[in-house]
Length: 283
Image 1 (spheres, rainbow, N blue to C red):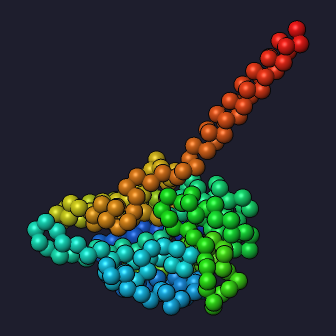
Image 2 (spheres, rainbow, N blue to C red; image 1 turned 90 degrees about the vertical axis):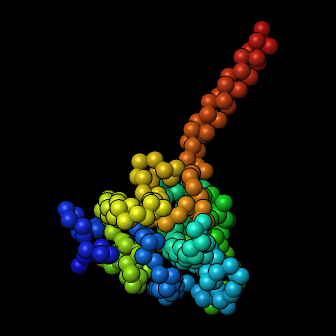
Image 3 (spheres, rainbow, N blue to C red; image 1 turned 60 degrees about the vertical axis):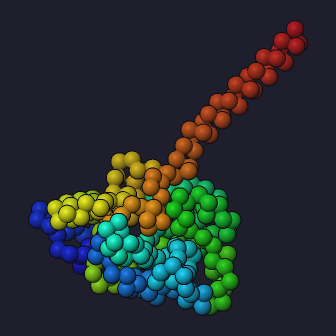
């Protein structure tokens, strides 16, 4: 059973059956997102993410009624209402999700080991190990992760850090994530990351050939994008900041090993200096 989703492969591309050890992820093509929010619903339904009355609210800005990713919204469809310089009025829509960073700061700072990289190179929080310390929350450069609070329907999960798991349970059973399965336009595509990067590049070329020069890729650079690579890449129709995304995200813990090494070296010099001073005093 193939678990790759989206339109048929382009010429020369091959559909690969993902296996443990493969790099799996999402390619979200915002140029064909219609804002239906089927992904949000499917995510909540499959993962038993609570639906709270506060989910249904008006932000006085657009049809976006959730506003951001958090513990109760693992997928967030952004609605950006925009009037361009030529007077044209457009809606820009994009389904945002956890980026599943290869150098995941949330994992780096977790003191209990609740956050780990799976065999599919995705990032998952183990709810039964998380102690709710919250260290992971400020560490995420995208503001994806947060603690669940005040949910009556699932009180046992209150105080625990929550985010997208890339449907780890479905992957383990050979199924694609619920959001990709539910997307009617295949704006959300799932599969091996090398294939998705190739597909994203071809889609960008097509849009540019059609005169859509505003189209650009986001987090598609696997070599060095400040995250060591990402498991979620996007095709955007405007600058990242338009969608509430950082232009040049950097994992804050990226230089953690270097800093600890420098601190250890400095501490060693201090100890050596104290030792020399003590030995000189004895003389």
